[in-house]
Length: 134
Image (cartoon, rainbow, N blue to C red; front, side, top):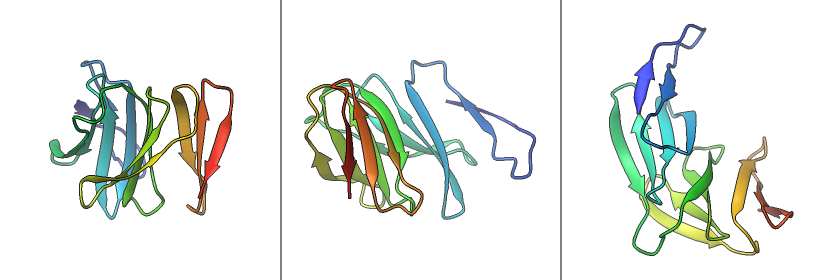
């Protein structure tokens, strides 16, 4: 993961990756700019891009498939990750542990997003369905 400066009102920097990262999400969480990178090794890694340091790694032996998409909750406390195993795993970003597993798709979760007020998550899948979770 590499950082390069960007011009703009907030000058938060831009991220690029040459190591096969599939998804990179940048979010300003409680005044610390955080990047979450999902990789082919079935982990999500959270970085403080101001210090170029890894803050957390979310994964485990129970997860062996790739990650397709990531999103933070509105508060930044929860990280949602869509996986090739047809599930969305919910990670507690403070406790650094899995908080829940959202099951119900019949194919890989290909995209996800949190609505503006933060009360619902939508997951999309190759099974052609969108599911709303609250």
